Every structure is written in structure tokens, then in C-alpha cells.
Image (cartoon, rainbow, N blue to C red; front, side, top):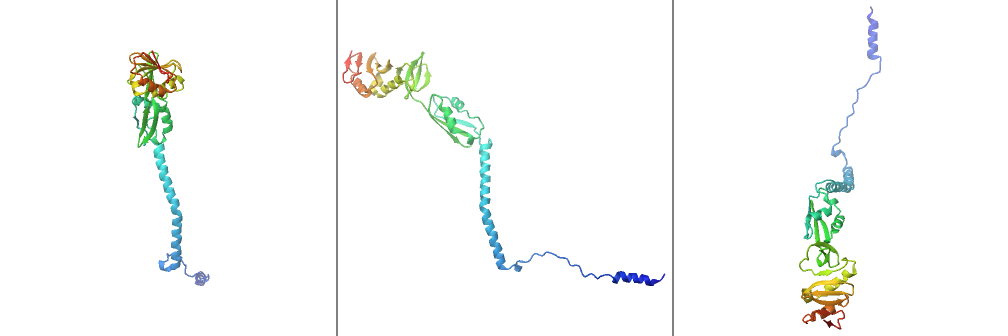
Length: 272
């Protein structure tokens, strides 16, 4: 075999094609701070500060909203601050159990969700309650403060006595006359009854001396009011007009020996 063609082919492979140069490989290199002009660095720093100042209110607002949401969820959506106690202050005629039952606030309900006004209205429907306030005492107590009605008179009713306050409201039923209350005989005691209002007006006008002697006040009609005093003495009062004048005249005549003193016309008094 001739070696010539073989060398020719080898020569063709090595030197017949185009010659390639060295391969270039690119690499990113972070420039040093000295490579950035000072003016550019200052511009970039100012831009970063502007971005931070613009984002700061939104970040603060977002944080506040998150805190508010967490607090609201804790107070309103969990039992962490739920009602554990209903504390009753000022109850004498009522028992704390009666007040709690009227409040109708379930144990464990979030304290912040209790409708204080509605709770006070429910308690205020109890007859002995004149005024009531309901407040929260964190973390878990509902405080009910009562002002109960004060009795002004006891009215005989079906073998017992109903107690009325200074407005004529019937708020209590008892077996006997409470100490210090006068007996008032009425047909239909109540705040809208004219006879009740007349009796209370007369009671309010009595002097201490008359109150000390009074055992019973009777309203047989609006113009037929009378007082029964100790010793079975009677003061004919008439109607409720000029109550202060009648009380003054009747007090002045307490020392007279008479079973009946008629002051229905206080300018002309009669005795019997």
C-alpha cells in the first residue's frame, strides 16, 4: 500500500479546514464601591430612603390593623375574657339570684359582647327596681348596681298588703305592715290611679306631728279623704287641694278635745 494518499488525508484533516481561535468565557464581577461614582451612590441612597419613607406608613398601618384585629378577636371571638361572675350591688328586697336570672347573661359569653343597655332593661322590669346600671369589670365580671324603690304606704289587698312607692308603683306584697309605713286604703292602687295620687299628695303635706299620730289614711273618693289618728280620732280632709294649709291647721288643733276635726275648708274648721 502506498503511504502517499494516507499522508494526504492526514494533511487534509489537520490543515485543510478553517483554524479556530481561543474560546472566550464571560464572568460577572461585582464592581467595587470605588467603581461607582459618588454622585450615583448618593442618588441611589436617596432613592432607597424615599422608598423606605413611602413604605413606612403602610407598614405601620398594617401592624396596627393586625394588632387591632388580634385584640378584637380575643375580646369578641374567644372566651378568654368571658363572663365569669355577675356581681350585684344594692339589692335588699331582691336576691342576687333573682337579679342574675333577670339579667339572662350566659356564663362564658365574651364580656365585650354583652349589651349593657338591654341587660339593664331586663333587670329594670323587676318591680322593686327603681334604677339600675350595668358595667363591665375586666377581665370577666358584670357589675349590676341597683337602686330599689322606697315604700311610701302599705295598701290592704286581699288579706295582705301591697307596698307602693312615692309614685304609686306597686312593687312588693307582704303579710304585715312594714315598720314606719302608713296604711292607705285605696280601691285600685297604681301610678295612674287618681285616688293613689291624691293620697300621696296628702301624705307628702303632713307635718311630722301629724305623721306621728297617723294610723290610717282612707280615700273613699277624691273629695272624701280622711285621716285616722291614734285614739280613734278622725281628721276630715276633703279633697287633696290646699294640703299644706290643712296640715298646718290640723296640727295646730291636735291638742283640742274632739273626736273629729274637719279641715276640708281650712278657713272654717269644725269639731265634733
